[in-house]
Image 1 (cartoon, rainbow, N blue to C red):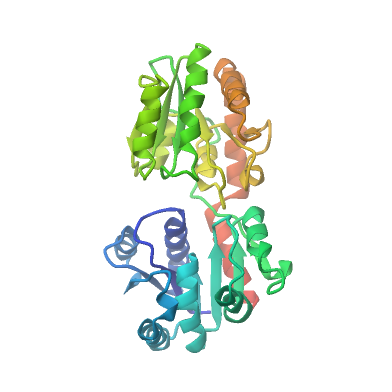
Image 2: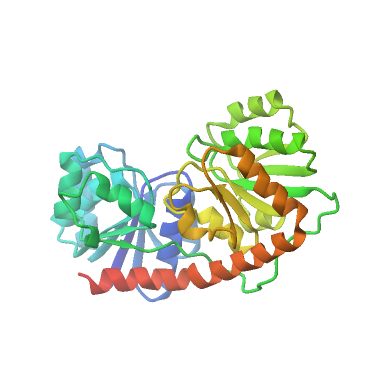
Length: 360
C-alpha cells in the first residue's frame, strides 16, 4: 500500500468530511502518497491544500455511477496516479468511484460507512458490496447492524470491521471550562439543525427545566433546515431568554469549554463524534438511549442515557447534574478518561491502516 486516495464529493463540511481529512492527514504524515478527491472549492479541498495534500476535483450525484464519461475519467485518474487504495465515506461515491476503481484494477476499494441507516437491497448495492468493495468498515456496531439488515445474503457479518472514530486530545484530565460569572448552568448541543439531530426535542425540554425553576442557558450550535421551525418553537414555548441558536460554530473545542453539561438529542448516530468531543473536554453527556450512543456513553459514569422520548426523565438527569456539582465534575473526569483511552485518533487510524493493509 503506497498511493492512497481519500474520496469525498460532498460540498459541505460534516463528520464524514472531517474523518476523511483527518485520516488523509495522518496517512500523509506516515509517508503515504495521499490524494484527496473532493468537490471543487469545498472546505475539504481548502484544508487539503493548506496541508500540502494533493487534490483532485470531482462532482458527483446519486446517479453518477451511470455516467460512462465520469467512470472513464476516474479510471484514467486511478491508473495515472497508480492508486492502489481508495477510501469512500458516502454511498454515491462508493458506487461511481468504486466501480471505476474495480475496472482500473485498484487493489483495495474501501467503504468507511458512518451512517446508521439501512442500505437498500438493490441490485447495484448487491453488486457493490458483493463484487466491488474489498473492505467494509463501520464506525459502530449500530452502523454494522444497519449495513447487514438488507444485505445478509450478499455479505457476512465477519466481512465488516468496526473501527470507532478518533479525536485529537487534550491530555489534561481536569474539567475544562471558561469561568462562568452568571451563576447559570450552561447546557450545550452541537450539530446540523435537522430532524435526525433532534433539536426539536430540546425546546420543550427547556420549557420543562424552566418550569422547574432551574437557572440555565441552552446553547445550540449549528445551522440547517430546521432553523426556522426551532425559532418558532422557542417563541411558542416561552424560552427566548433560555435558548440561544448560535448558528454554525467553527471552533468546537471553544464552544465545549463554555458548557457544564452536553445534551444530545439525536434520533440516531452512526458514531456520535460530538459526544466524544464533549467527553474529551470533560463534560458529562445526557442523551437518548438510541443507536450508537450506548457504545460511547457509560451509563451513570460518563453520562446518562434516557429512553426515548421521555423528556421528563431527560430533565431529571439534567436537574441532578445541575444540583450536584461534585457528581458533574466526577462524571466529567470519567468522561475525559474514557475518551483518552478509547478514542485516541492516531490509534484508531493505525487500526484502520493495519486492517486495510493486512487484509487484502
